[in-house]
Every structure is written in structure tokens, then in C-alpha cells.
Amino acid sequence: DGGITQSPKYLFRKEGQNVTLSCEQNLNHDAMYWYRQDPGQGLRLIYYSQIVNDFQKGDIAEGYSVSREKKESFPLTVTSAQKNPTAFYLCASSPGSPYGYTFGSGTRLTVV
Amino acid sequence: QKEVEQNSGPLSVPEGAIASLNCTYSDRVSQSFFWYRQYSGKSPELIMSIYSNGDKEDGRFTAQLNKASQYVSLLIRDSQPSDSATYLCAVNERNNDMRFGAGTRLTVKP
Image (cartoon, rainbow over all chains, first blue to last red; front, side, top):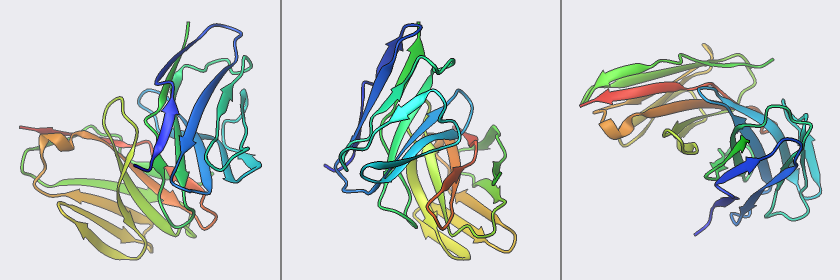
């Protein structure tokens, strides 16, 4: 079945640690996105990529980094510079405008 | 800053009633409009898309779009307890920049 796979489902980070969240899609979509969702709040865009080897910052890119070496993969690294990383992280993909997004199941990151 | 506004709710309706969810957006060049359903602790799921003025029906769901008023709504007929979720409105501009509202929490009471 086609879809987006995010892993791990739950992740715990110690202070000062970098962690990487995985996102893989087999939908052959060109565009991929990372969002952050805090409790009771909407989605905030971290980074997006519309083509391999190219990506742009979203509204809250500070403390995060991404790569897009393959069409299928768009990993997100939460660096130690991100001071409040505890949140629900959602990866999405799209074939492009005017179509909607398909979301992965999300990764819940907690700082311990 | 381009905005998508939704009433955060909670909106509570009895089982079998019509639930009406509303959304306004600020960017006049917006081209496509979406409703996502998000159950607690889960990721959003696309349930409706609408691109032109008027109504679009899919089963118990009807999306309504009025570009002149910059308004999009979602009606859920014969609401069921399984419809209890947060509904996110999203607006997609020409460059595929999708903006999400904060969501309206719907509770359907048996």
C-alpha cells in the first residue's frame, strides 16, 4: 500500500542531544513537508521540499535541519539549539498544487 | 501574515444532528481548500477538498465555498459519535503554500 511512514512513533531526547526523525513515502510525490503540532494548537511549518536536493525554511525552522537526497525520504533533525522540542511532529507529502497533503502517523518527541 | 481562522470550539451536537464548521481566510489568491479530520493523538486525514464556489457533497459531508466572502464551511449530516474529532481547515495558495487553521473540536453526544 502507498503511504508515508514516520519512525519512531515515540522518541525521547536528553538535553543537548540531536535526534533525527525519519519520513519515507512511496507515493511518488514531489513535495514533502515537516510540521510541528503543540497541544491544542494548529500545525506550524518547519521545512519543506518541492524537489530532490532542494528545501526551504518554513515559519519555525530555527533549531531544525533537513535533507532531501532521495525523492522518497525527508529526514528531520532536531538539534540541541531547539530549546523547546517537545511536540508532535508530522511529515506530509503532496503531488503538488492543487492537491491536498497525505500525512504520516507522526512522531511524538519528549525531552527528558 | 496570511491567516486561516476557525472557531476553536468545542462544538457539541447531539447524535443525528447537523454539525456546521466554519473557516475564514485572508488571502484572496487562495486556489484550493481542504478539510482534515484529526482524532486525538492521531495525524490529520484529508476528508474533503473544494476548488470552486458552491457546494461539494461526499456522503454525509458537504463542503461549501464562497470566495467573494473568503469563507469555507463543512457540514456533517446525521452526526455520529465517531465524528468526534478536531477538524482542520486548510487553504492552499497558488505556490502550494498550505496554511492550516488551529482546528475546531467537535463532540457528538449519543
